[in-house]
Length: 589
Figure 1 (cartoon, one colour):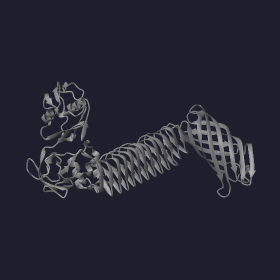
Figure 2: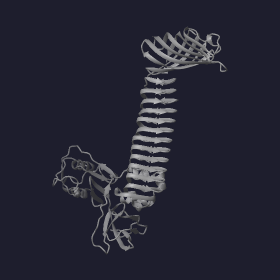
Figure 3: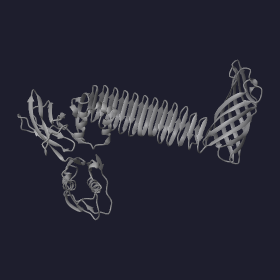
């Protein structure tokens, strides 16, 4: 169904006169007086939009069945809204009023009823035939239901139906519905009473949307929703009944019969599973819950929940939760959560969470995916967003299609623009000032290769990469003296204290490990303050002091040279702090 509410603006004169001034929608909107005078060509869509805006209601219709962009048939009109619709669209359409809506429904045919009613042992049986009022032919797969008790059934291929339910000494309001037929209600009076009694059961109209069809055509929908219940939804359409309680064994076998799919309940208990219109309270199922529209408050299922509308509150599925619109609250799935709209709250999935649009917070054992992550993603393996992300924390990788605030992983982080920092072995970004990793590929940053030497006769070949503020260091070291462990591997982080000028000043922290890969292993941690002078665009020379802390194996006292600050020898090894000077040349790529 289509909802239109917009004010048409153009070079036309459209004057709407109301016959009387009323408050609310209690008045007959179809009976409101209007007068139309136009100076140029006006389409049906423009007029419906303007009427809707001026009178504070919606027109609801299937847009594919109306020629909305065709010009109006008459240049001038004076009369009621109902007369105008009848004049423009003809008798093939049905026009209904509900609070806030005027419903336009294509219904060229009418239904007729031939039925008899029998009451025995407190059970009412209504049986008969449904026919086309114009051709007198039987109509199959038509819905018949009592709006008071919600008892319902469908006609067979011969147009025959039989409806049983407990009801005595009261009238029956039997409604007939079928796609492309006008809804028709008949009043059946039992022989014991001539008074028409209507129960105070509330009905509501909810405009249709595409999610109901998508839900019923899904794998789980096809597996658990019967053909007769689908036909019931097609025939009855967007009209729903409210009921305090419903109980089901399986879809279609419930206290509301096949009408459970058109019933919105406060409490729903599905022993195996059930298919209802919606919940506004609590729903519990042994295996599964399937809901055509919205679920509000609490929903719990042993295996899965499948919601065609939105979920508000708490939703818990032993294995799987699927919501076709939005989630506002908490969604917990033992394995997988999938929301096709927005998540305004928290998703917790044993393996995976997926939000097709925006997600507030997601926590998963393996993977999270969202179009936008507004606040937080935590995953054991990977987090992924198609566009932006807030804070991403994962065991292996984080990927953001656009901007991100912060990313932390053990292996790789990737984003276009990083507003905060990236922490991982490998960081990739177009813009990032703070990249805390050993290998950083930042488009607006700096990559260089440096060759240097210090007072311990260690030569250093280091690869530096990072952003404009911080960078990573990964390299090899070789001691030119005759020592037991001449070859070492070093890694660390650096800060550009004075960046991107001819004169630069960097602060670095490095850790060097040297080993003979048999018995001896020595460790040195160093803080370096390195002034530099840039020569041209691609060359920099540097030299500066270094404060070092060495942890050496026993007998390795000659491994380091420099100005000793503290030296302590124990049976476990040698602990030494000392100062040195380091210098070298750096090639900038």
